[in-house]
Amino acid sequence: MFKDNKKLVAETIFIKEALKLNLSLNEFLLLLYFDNSYDSIFDIALLSKTLNMSEEQILQAYGSLMAKKLIKVVAIKDGYGKVIEKVSLDNFYNEIKTEYKTKEEEIKKEDIYTIFEKEFGRTLSSMDYEIINAWIDNGFSEELVIAALKEAVYNGVPNLRYIDKVLYEWNRKGIKKPTDIKKQLESIPEAPVYEASIMDFDWLNEKWIYIKWVR
Image 1: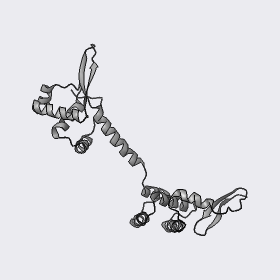
Image 2: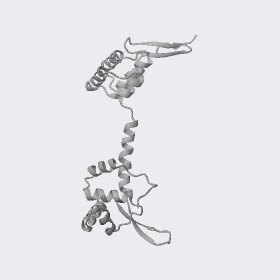
Image 3: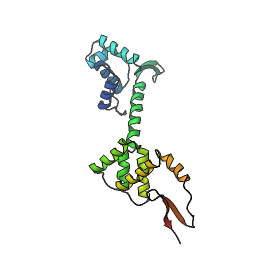
Image 4: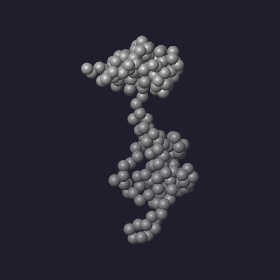
């Protein structure tokens, strides 16, 4: 009666969806039954016996799930060409797929603390967390804080004190977002360019510096 080749939706997901969609216990049980059912045919007598529910309760839950557009009836042909009606949970699966795709993207998206740990090559301390949170609480966007982090790493000074000084200088110059950095650099007179040199702007000393020089 139950599918062996179909990956069942975890009960925890069903419970979460039931809570989110405000499903009743009977609706939840009926939905779970159809998810596991081999043929997904609406047989009220069998449903009543299997779920230990009255036919009236079955019809009420079934109608409610239909009204909520979580299930639908589809007509298909069996191996003998006979048209039969089956209950489809595609709408409900789409609800789950959309939610967990979003969750998956959120998990994949690195938060600011993970980025700091990767750049520092170590686990952040409680003090590190407090300092990073203080920057954000004081109005620095996460994007700008990450830009300051990358600036510190690029200059070989990957520590919070240096990043704090960079953020202070940027704030003093009115830099509020990463795109402002480029505009600020464009307004600074260019340093002499020598062959095989790589330049960077030292925000703390307000001058161009040579990051690499190849003779």
